[in-house]
Every structure is written in structure tokens, then in C-alpha cells.
Length: 107
Length: 122
Image (cartoon, rainbow over all chains, first blue to last red; front, side):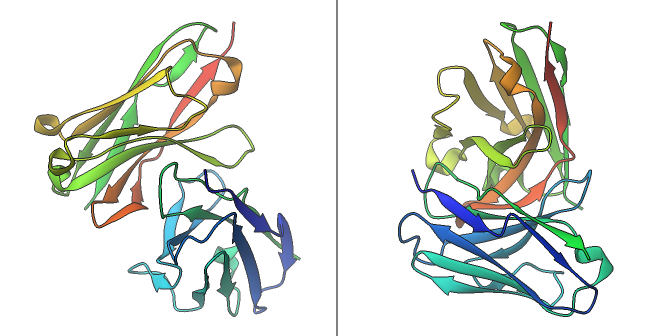
């Protein structure tokens, strides 16, 4: 199985700042990396797939990058609604494994 | 509008069984794969199972940690998917989400239901 390791597990930032979350796969996933956002008490929402492709309706302040085993999610100019948990997911093969999550909190 | 609605959650005794249902609308169900993903209280996301569509012979895939205790199925005529879980344990306590994946992006879950809460306790 492909293991997904996210860092950091938590992160405190202020509105207007930029943050980066990283995700490391245990083997090359050839760009098949997915990012989700989950707000408290809500279902996860797809943000990015194929490592870099923004889902329809997702603001352009979100961006994804990476290749092989190393990937990142960058959020520019944080907005109040961005404080949530973020998960990466292996999109290459079953089992569809998730990273442990990163909780982005307001500083 | 895509709608995904899970039902069937509740309180179950250890060793018991549960069948979760997921009714969908707003998209061509036949074109999509469907998944169940769960989230234990205060924890991260764990994929449970996937069922592919008719074009893929309704192939099923399961998380190894649950294999043998779960069965995913679908009824295309009802645009619904189901998850049967048996021999329930306390660690199965979670919110169970029904999600869809496109057959062109097999693991990308682009729509999620609101979740069904399952509590396993005596």
C-alpha cells in the first residue's frame, strides 16, 4: 500500500499570510495526488487533483505542485474561510490512502 | 445539483451488523464509481471500499483492515450504493461518507455526502 505522510500536522497562521502543506508518498505516484479541505462539522471537499488541477469553483489562491513522491499545497493570502483541515490522498491505486491531515488554525 | 444522502447509521452493539444506504441524484449514476470513506471521532479520513460501474464489471475493492467484514454493492436502477458491515467493533465508530469518483479519475472523490454516524457500543 502507498503510505501518505503529511506535514505539519497543525499550523497556525494569520489572515493574509501564505502557507504550504506538504505530502510525501511512500513511492512514486506519478502526479496522482489529491487534496481535500474539511471544515469543522462538514464533509470534505475536493480542492485539487492530478497534483495541480484546481477543481471547479475553488479559488485561485489555492495551488498544488509536486511530482514523484513529494507534493505540496499552497494557500496564498489566507481568508477566514480557509481555516480548516486539509488532507492529501494517493490517487494512483487502491487502496486510496489519505495523509493524516493538517489542521490550519488562526493565529 | 449533485446530491448524495447517506442513511442507516445509528447505535449498534459490538458484534452486530449494519447496512448503510446512499441515495444519489443529479448526475448519471451509471457513469460513476462509488466509495465509502469513514472518519473516526477526531481522526483523519480512511477509505473503506469502492465499487466500479458496469463498464468495469462492478469490480469491488476494499481496505485491507476491513476486508471480510464489509461488502459494498450498488443498484443502478435506484442510483444507490450500500455498505454492509458485520462483526462491528468499537473502533468502527465513525462517520461514514458516501462519495463518487469518475471513471476517468479513479480515486478522485469529487462529491461527498453529509455522512452517516455509526456508534458501536454496548
